[in-house]
Image 1 (tube, rainbow, N blue to C red):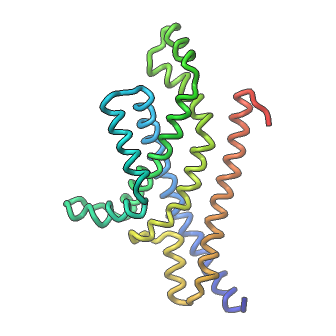
Image 2 (cartoon, rainbow, N blue to C red; image 1 turned 90 degrees about the vertical axis):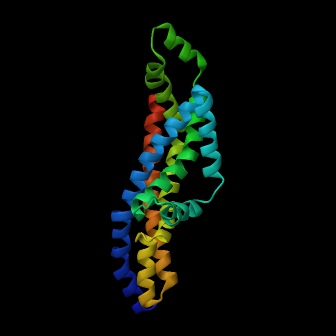
Length: 224
């Protein structure tokens, strides 16, 4: 590695990092919050076994998990304008990321809901709690403790998945590196630099996941 390459990497690193802070992180956070809401609603509908809505939810999960996210991005951003629905790149990316990851997270939440003993629901009914009170006070807190590792993995996966939004004209970290590379043509160094920033973000999330898991385990009476 010569001095010129080092100087390019040192100059480009703050630009790539700022693209991550200004675009990648907000995109991930907003999409994840929406995906979490979708997953809880879809999982609770399946858990409650609501006849028609349950089939709609199963179809949504089947469709989203069976098609690539890149194709979904193209359909929403490039395809919908053909039927009169136009979305800006950032909202389109949020919707695709949220609905894509929400389908996977819904199965994690559903499995966690089903892991709560049925006897606890019956006990809640015996003390006069409504169904929604039982879900809110008894079932969901325990389910989230069980689902937390899987949901954390989904968040980390979503951080990396944001690299696909460069295909719909969003200037995030990968697109920033592409622009810099078009001037200097140093693909190995620049793309490794992007990988390093992604690794930094995901490492921070992994550490936070471990800290929260330890706290959840201590609340649940488990020790490592």
